[in-house]
Structures are given as structure tokens and as C-alpha cells.
Amino acid sequence: MEQKEEISQEVEAQEAEPWEAWEGKLVKYSLLIGLAALAVLGGLVNVFILS
Amino acid sequence: MAQEKRWYTGMVSSEDWWAFWIGLFFVLVGILAGATGVDLSGWVIDFPKWTNISNSLAPDRTGLMSGISSLLVSYVIFTIATCIGAKAMKMDMKKYFWSWTIIFFLSVICYVLSRNAYIQATSIERAKYGIDWSLSIGGAHYIVALFVGLIIGNLAPKKFREFLLHGARPEWFIKIAIVFLGCKLGMKVVDATGFALELLLVGVCATIAAYMLFWPLVYTFARRTFNFSREWAATMASGISICGVSAAIATGGAIRARPIVPVMVSSVIVVFAVIELVVLPPVLTYTPWFQEPMAAGASLGLTVKTDGADAASGAITDQLMRTRALEELGVQWEEGWITASSVMTKIWIDMFIGVWALVLAMLWLYYVEKKPDEKVQKMEIWWRFPKFVLGYFIAWILVGVLGLTVIGGEAMDWGIHPFESVARHLFFVLTFTSIGLVTDFRKLAEEGMGRLAMVYGLSLLIIIIPIGWALAWIFHHGMMPPLVSG
Image (cartoon, rainbow over all chains, first blue to last red; front, side, top):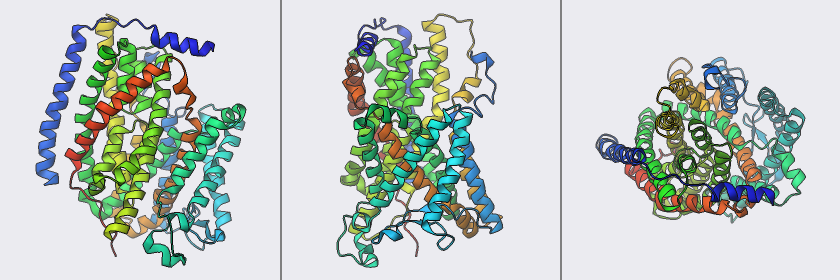
């Protein structure tokens, strides 16, 4: 029971910090890199390996 | 803390390194056997399909010794090897030994019983075994081992369950098996160099795209929709995007999260990985994914979040799909390519942990802890690098290069086969039993875990699986496993 309460407190009572600009940048640039990788590498793989 | 580390830190004390040492030791024994012609490896126990149980055990090299002798020799040798590792990792040796022994023989019983020809023989093999029906469940031994492990791990008396945890090391066993898998890739290079390299290339490309899409989406989802704090969101995003437990722990270390954070995230990851392990292989086999077996394998690497469950689900899918192909299409795909496809993507993801841990460590220093003067060591990449992956690549290169040059393909296959195939399957079964034993479904019932499980489950369903499946198809579509020759 005590352990349950401890876990509950850990997860539920965590005060979430406000979203900051650097987090937005991290997310934005990661997504951009991911999409660029998808377009470029996907294109290359499809042209040179899978076709 | 980190400053005291050297490049060789953990070489004799970490599970990763002991997977490397044990796996590579047996690989070298196999190579030596192939090079000299001395039978150093034929003792490994195999579990052929049977109709008479007296034929259920046999050494890989038929005629070398009896099945029972091979089983005992294999038990003794693998016990010594893992006990040396356990001792170096400072485990409680007595408890490890007895627990390992129980798990080993439990796995052997599951393996033997589920290799019955009525359970596993394909329709084409029925005449060979003199039977007129069979269930054709390839890979039944993995499923049986998992369920037996789950039953004991969740229903056995607490004391016994906890005792078995001393020897239930699914991540360790699967890492050893993955080093063995490197040999298989090496042999495949000997047989089909181009295809193996293509698989390697498309695997890394899919991984880069997947990771850079998964992480930010899950992080944003956890932070903005579920209002998690940064340490929870970052740890969870890494755990669900990269390779589960080790990524959660690496991220927790990099951002200096409280120890409870990666531990709790890890427990959710393990439970969901088992659910994926049970659900995804049949889903992939009996849907249009069957037309794209290599892409199906890769999709597992991108969506199943522990090394053990990923390789295990790859092995089940490999068996199920090959059985279906043989039954319905009359074609025999080579064993191991679908598993290799699932492991290949996962291995690239594993390698990414070090880089991402470094990026997060720097961001947290500069923006969260506001310590711009403190430097993050570049060696962090090496420390976080999964060392068993080195073993996988070394095995791959050694077997491939030596098999193509000085030793020759046939001799190499003779020497290495007991490890790249038979011992690998045995360690897979040990992994399945152990996964079952360590999976505690009670965790999900604990208060507070519900919110974590909710984010994890929803992220899997709406982010990881759809994107992972799309990327697996984009980067692997049209690739087919080579057919068995002859």
C-alpha cells in the first residue's frame, strides 16, 4: 500500500514545468531532420536499392 | 561520477560486455573449428521435431554423442560461461546458479514438448514423420516458453518468483543470441553479399527517419496532452522511441532524472513489449504484411521496444511466415532473414542511444540546469554504446570475411553452424522463458502507473506503430528473403 501511494505521488503530483521555447525548437528541428531524412534517404533507397 | 570513467569501464562488470565476451568466445570457437576441421562445436544440443520422444534431443553433429550427453555437455558449458559472467557482474552466485539451472531445464522441457511433429511439422513434412495431420505452428517453442514463464512469473508463490529473478536475464540472453546472429549474417554475406548489405543500408536509413520522428512526437504528446514534467516526458519518449529499457535508463542518466523515473518507465515498457510480442507476429503473418516479409520484420524492429522482445517477435514472425509461405505458396524462404530484418533496425536504434543521450545531456545542462560552463564528455557516446552490438558486427565481419577467403564457406558453415543456429535458438528460448518470468502484470494495476501506461499505450497505437509500419514499408518494400537453394 505504501509503495502504491509512493508511486501514485511520484506520477500524479509531479508539477509539469511550463513549455519553453527551447523545447519547441528541439521538437521542430527533430521533426524537420526526420522528415528530411525520410524524403532524401527514402528517395535514395527507392531509386538505388528497391527499384 | 562520469569523470571517473575510463574507455574500458564496465568491460568486466556490465551485462552488455558479458554478452560481448560470451557470444564472441563461442563464435571464435566455431571459427577455429571451421579453420582446423577439429570438431570443437558439434556438441551443442539441438531439438529436432519428433514423433517418438526418444528422438527429441540430438547434438548438432549427429553421431558425435547421444542426445542426453549433448544436453548435459551444453548445460555444463553454457552454465560455466554464464556463471563466469555472473560472478564478474557480482551477482549472488549460489542463487544465480540454481535459478539459471531451473530456467535452463524449464526452457528445455518447453522446447522439447513443443517440437512435437503434430505441433510443428508443416504439411510437406508430414510424410517424413509418418503423420497425417499437424498444426504447423512454427515457433511454438517460443510461445510455449513465454507462456510458461508468464504463468510462473505471475502466479507462482512470491518467494519462488523472486528467487527465479536471479537467473532470469532476458536482455543478457538475447544479447548473446544477437552476437550469434552476427555469424548468421556473416554466413549470409558468404551466400548473398549484396542482399545482406542492402538490408544493412535500408535498416540504418529507416532508423534515422523513425527516431527523429518518434521522439519529438511522443515528447510533445506526453508534455502537452498529458501534462508530464520534462524528466518524465524525456525518459518516456526515449523509452518508447529508441530501445526501451536501456534508452530510458540512458536518458534518465543523461538528464539526471531521479532513479525512480527510468525504473517506472522501464516496467511499463517491459509489460507492453510482451503484449506486442504476443500480438504482432500473428497480425503481421495473417494480414497483407505477409506479402512483404522483410518489411514486416523491420516493422518489429521499429515498434517493439526491448531487444529481447524484438528479436523474439522477429523469430516467431520468421517461423510463422516461412511456414505459411511453404504451405500456401509452395516456396521455402531461407530461415533467419525476417529475424535479421527485425534485429537490424533495432541494432541501429540501439546505437543511436549514445548520440541522443549526449544531445539530451547538453540540452539539460544548458537549458534546464542552466550550467552553460559545464562540459558534457564526448566519451558519453562510447559509454552509452551498446557493446553487444560490437560483438554482433565483429562476428558478422569475421565470419563473412574468413568464410569468403581463407576458411571457405563450407568449412565455416560446418564450424559455426552449432552457434549461429542451434545455440542461438536455445538462447532465444531462454530469453522467452525469462521474459515471462520478469513480466509482472501487477505493475499495470498499481496506482499512478495508469497514467504512464495510458501515454505509453496511446503513443504506441497512434504514433509508433503507424509511423513505424509506414517507414518499414517505405524502406523495405519489395525485398524478399532468398529462397532455400536445392
